[in-house]
Image (cartoon, rainbow, N blue to C red; front, side, top):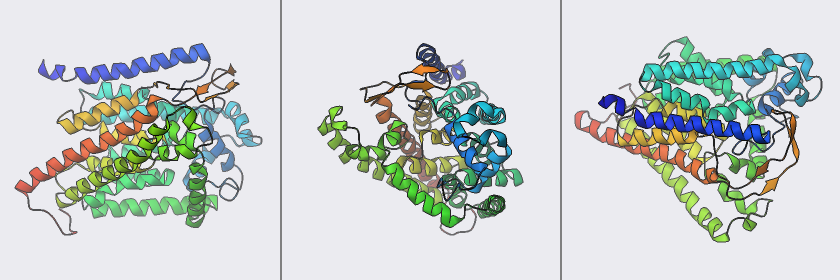
Amino acid sequence: MKGRLRLVPELLLALAVVASVVSTAMAFRATGYLPQPFVLDTNDTFMDWFNTAYWAHRPGAYDVWRSIYPPLSFVFLDLFSLPGCYLQAPFHARDCDWLGRGVIYGFYLLDVALVWLSFRRADPRTAPMRTLAFGLGLPLLFTLERGNLILVAFACFVIAHGPLVTRGPWRWLATAATINFKPYLLLPVLAHAVKRDWRALELAGIATVFVYLVTLAIVGAGTPIELVANTANWVVFQSGQVWNEIHYSTSYAPLLLVRGAQIPVLDFVPSRTIETIERLVPIVIRMSQLVALVALAGAWLQPRALPLHRISTILLAAYLVTQSPGGYTQTFLLFLVLLEPWKGIGPIVAIVCAYLLCLVADWPLSTVLELSTNSWLSGRPVTPSFGLAIGHFVRPGLVALILWALALDSLVRVVRAHRAHRPTLGLAPA
């Protein structure tokens, strides 16, 4: 009976996620578009997939479109799309390319299936609630609506960092695929260095370089020089897209750009609030980086004190607190967090935050912009509105809280480990 009572909090949190999905579905039925926090451009569903696939079937992905995706993305989309649908614009391909749409839905279902198998292996009792919340949660649904290649990368991520495969070529190749789809996923792999598992790190590195060189030869473009130059150009471009950055962020960093936004922010937010944000955000980010660094240093000294996925979580969370590559990147972080057992204050706080980040809902504070446009999903004219919302301030805070909760819990484990084992200072495996 006591064991079942411990499942009640997670059951209630999972049901809250389901209720938020039902509420969003009802809003879509009434208005014809997915409300905030989904993207305001209601006519550009699956944009990340079909815009990228468009350039997979023609030259110029790196020198014209200035893509920051490594070549693997274009090789994959060239294989899983219909070339004849990309003779015109990417928008036309959405209705034409049934193969592309099928692959999007297929990988979403595959992701949910892999998550279920992983959570069931980690803890069969909590697996149903965690799978339900994750599969219907905002990060994965947002990824699905955008058609982002995270859908593909995530399946590889589960194999590379989950409990389904612990060693062998599948894990190395999956790791290589995650990095070649999303280079920032190199960070979770560095957990092997903290654990001094040099062989796993070496094999993953060799596989990553191999996949990159093969796909580079196939595409004939996407050299390191091109990727670095395009990334620098992308950073400059994104710095001017303040509202796109704030809309669904993992970090408070974009809030520092609010004062320079083209939309007159001070008409909607008191200047004192902006000044408070500008003063507190750097402190939150720097302190979060510091606690992560201390936790990682402790893990280095006591490599047996923490599981591999915990170190990966801290590395990834520190990056997401520092800057936001998009709200859908939370899929990777939340998967790692939900592998934690419901035991101890730190893990429990992190798990609750993960459930809250899965809620498909937002609370608008003010309307900044209204549009008259069409909705691709409903196929009818709509008038979506966009504005400041509670989520803009709460979601980055929850990501930071995950980092703090797990980092502090890790430090407690490291201190306890010091009582039984001397610190390991050398580079030799522990």
